[in-house]
Length: 166
Image: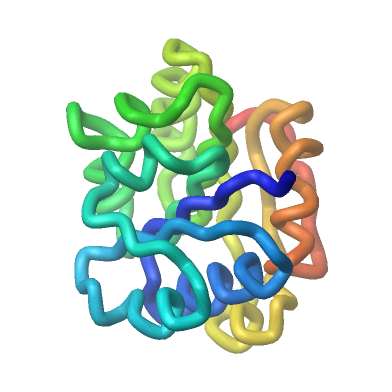
């Protein structure tokens, strides 16, 4: 059975990336602050979740593609955030272009709760996202990278493991 992928952040890039994952046969949970941005994905079969917490509790792999580092902090930390609510053994993948220090902070918080965290910023813009040809640079534990590689390969072509978080 394929892992359920939760996708947070369905802007220009995130919507295309989540659509590829859905088309590859993975069950997809979707959350974004502006619900209308999820409508086309839900029409294709994704399941709408009304909060970050609800998405985290019902997904095995949680991918975030949000605007800025402050948005990343908002979705990962706090009582309603991903780290506090994800199921033990889940994989957290932040694909936002963010700060290395934040990637390390997420990994530390994830490890404390029995979760795996990867930072995986992308290059290729909305065209790369639409075409599934993104370049993806991944940091974190090698085992987690290997486990999530099949999902990365749906969204991109040039996938590079870069070493530890950050």
